[in-house]
Amino acid sequence: MQRDPVAQLRQALAEDAFTLFCQPIGALGARITYPIAEALVRLREEETALCPPGEFLPVLEHYGLMPELDRWMVRQVLRHLASGPHPRFSVNLSAQTLADRSFPAFFADQLLASGVAADCVLFEIEESDALAAPECTARLAATIGSLGSGVIIDGLGRAEDFFESLKAPCLQYVKLCSSLTRRLISPEPLSEDLAGLLQVTSNLGIEVIAECVEDREAIAALQRRGVGFAQGCGIYQPHPMDACVEGRHAA
Image 1 (tube, rainbow, N blue to C red):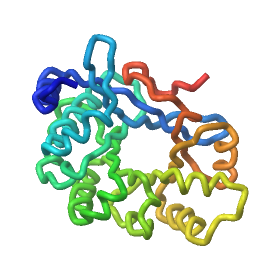
Image 2: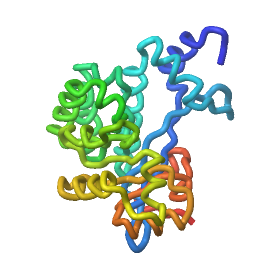
Image 3: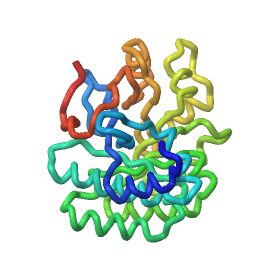
Image 4: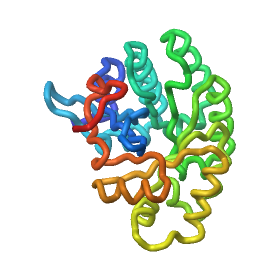
C-alpha cells in the first residue's frame, strides 16, 4: 500500500477499487450443495494484484471507516443477487456497523432499490462483537429480521460461555470456531457442553456451520454428528463472486 493508506482506501471506496470474492458453505446432505456463500473483500492494488484484508481492514477499523466498507459490500452483494440466480450471501458486519443506528434503514433502502428479497441476505456478526455490544446486536438483528433477513453468529466457541450468543434475535445459523470443529471431528465422545450446544441449537431451529473443514474425513465425521453445514477449503475454495452460481458443485 502507498505511503498514505487512509487516502488510498478512501479513494478505493470512492472508485470501487475493492472486489468481491466468496466462499460457499456446504449443506452436508447425501450430496453436498451450496445454498449460502460468504462474501469476502479484496483490494485491487494493480491490474492483477489483490491486497488481502489483513492489510487494509485494520486501517479502516482504526479510522472508523468500516461502516463505509460494509455498505459498499451490501450494495455489491445486492447487485450480484439481482442478476441471479445465486445462493444466499452472507455479509460480515463490523463492530462499528453494529453500533450504527442508520444501517438497517440503509439496508431497507438498498433492498427496495435492488428488488432483491431480504431473505437472500444474511449478516455475520462475530461472537466477540455480539457479546461486547449485546444491545446493539439485539437492536440491529431485530430490525433486519423484521425486513426478512437473518443473522449468523461467527466464531462461536471462542468465549467461555458460548450459549450467551444464542440469545440474539433472528439467529438462523451459528458458525463454530476451529477448536469446536476439531472437537466435533474427533472420535472421542462429545463433552457435555458441546453436546448441549448441538441439542440447544436443534431445539431452537438454529443451524450449525462447522468452520475450517479441510478434508473428506472431517466432512464424514460432521455428518455422523448431525452437523448440517460446513465451510473451509475442504468444502470449497474462495473464488471471485462473479463465478458464484446457485447450485454449482465442487469438482
